[in-house]
Amino acid sequence: MNIHDISRAPTDRSPEIQFDPDACSLSISGASFPEDGAAFYGPVLSTLDEILKALDQRCVTVRIALNYFNSSSAKALMNLFLMLDDAAQAGNQVIVNWFHAADDDTMKEFGEEFAEDVRFVRFNVIPTAVTS
Amino acid sequence: MTFTLFDNEERMAGRAEAALRDLDFGSDEARAAYSELLDAYRKSLREQRRMMRLGDRLQEQLSTVNQELVRRRAEAERALQQLRDAQDSLIQAEKLASLGGLVAGIAHEINTPIGITVTAASILADQVAGLRRQFQAGTLARSDFEEFMTTADEASRLVLSNANRAVMLIQSFKQVAVDQTTADRRVFELKPYLSEVLTSLSPRLRRAGHRVVVECDEGLEVDGYPGALFQVLTNLVMNALQHAFEAGKTGTIRIRARLFDADTVELRFTDDGNGIAAADQGRIFDPFFTTKRGAGGSGLGLHIVFNLIVGTLNGSIAVQSQPGEGTTFIIGFPRVAPARPVAV
Ligand SMILES: Nc1ncnc2c1ncn2[C@@H]1O[C@H](COP(=O)(O)OP(=O)(O)O)[C@@H](O)[C@H]1O
Ligand SMILES: [Mg+2]
Image (tube, rainbow over all chains, first blue to last red; front, side, top):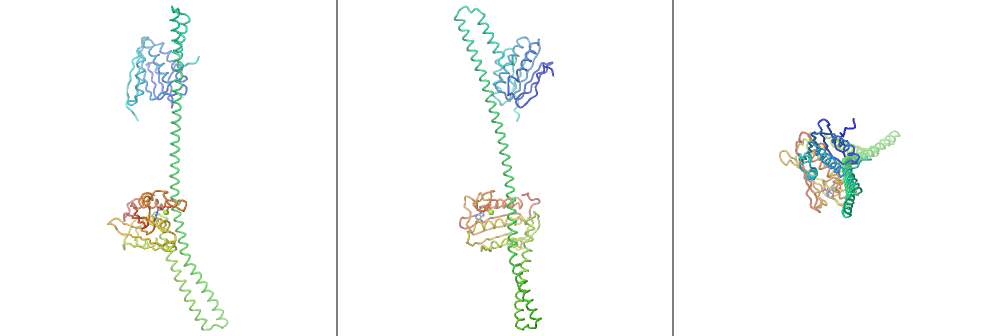
């Protein structure tokens, strides 16, 4: 495993993170309430920051499909989106697809709020069929 | 330096502090306003951290509570299962107890004729020994011999009739005992079967002085489970003894069986005792419902009856009762039991 690998297997309390450096695509899915938010997201975000800063004229796609997250995860997400916004401002094409269960209004509103906080990223809020 | 989720904000604040140090603000008012703003930003940053920690902690507590709920629920389900198992074994115990009661009844019933037989036989033996002594001594008078013959007649009559009675009792118990211990299906004639069952239960009834009347269509054949029927009748008789008739008072139990329609047997079990309060009538078939808790009631008798009638015999049971006037249990079941009984 190289130090740039930011992929993570899912656990009860932390999401699955998949990163494909060639396609420049990132996916975060599942539930996110790690015991220590900074410890979980810190290394991921700082590595990602380095990767993003090295990009030039690339297309970056990010898929967020979380069904639940806690406050520090929300903060980590905000940091992620600001990083992406910087990368977009620097000339990359960045798309974020925010998936939420069709009947989950809270998750939908979180997505819409994050969408307002970025200026250069294309931020889509997409409902998905409810499974249960 | 370790990573914090507020790196961005810290960097911003740091830059603003550097600006406060290094830049020329033109006026003291402008510098004061900038400094005030920076203070407010720092405060707000601390506030944000606090809110985040609070939010995380709340979430943490919530998930602990949730886990606790899940755990307790599993525990409650386990306890319920244990209760169900306990209920099953109590029902088993009640069935065994009634088997025990049956054995005790048989022993008691047979004891009397056997005892009389033993007494008569030993009297006879004594008399024969005495007669032989007189005969060998040459002192046997005609009157002695006549007396002996009277006694011998009486004794052998007693031995014969009581031995016969014992044989008859054993015969009737035998079938009942076989039925009691097997779930076997067979064809049997209802009327003699009812009489046999009642004979096996009669010691207790007679001791208390109650009267039992059995009325049944002649030649009514049932293809089903005599063991289940035996258990039902035993439990109903025991209940009548325990609940219907006050100690010291005597009553009548009437069992009427007939073909209700081509396929259905109707059996009415009536006592003229205390009756059942209207409020209790809907609950008497529930497991553990008893009005004699702590006084020998388990509340399982009628539950077993219900299970046997509905489960094994594929029938139905209802109760009619007027407090003070008595109780009737109305039982209906198919004359020919359906192919497979529901296990009880
Ligand atoms: N023949 C009857 N007369 C009056 N009450 C009865 C009769 N049979 C049953 N009961 C009532 O129904 C209740 C439940 O009976 P049962 O299930 O056999 O439990 P138990 O005999 O252990 O109390 C009894 O406690 C009694 O109150
Ligand atoms: Mg009872």
